[in-house]
Length: 62
Image 1 (cartoon, helix red, strand yellow):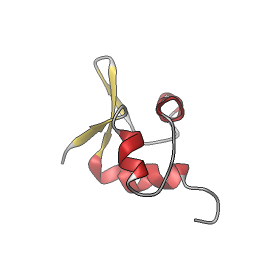
Image 2 (spheres, helix red, strand yellow):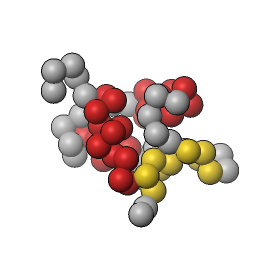
Image 3 (tube, helix red, strand yellow):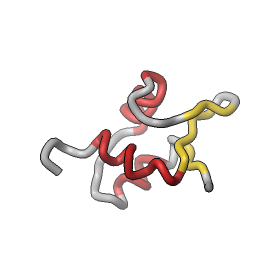
């Protein structure tokens, strides 16, 4: 299982049709609204959790 840095998440989510800024992702990670973990000074999401992250930012009804 691999990790995705939250700096790479905007691109990964855009590939799924979801536009979201790095700042929105960082805030969601630090507030615990998406499954992310801090390693040193950087935040990461498990690749397997990408669908959960996408759902958190998907427009209502999508």
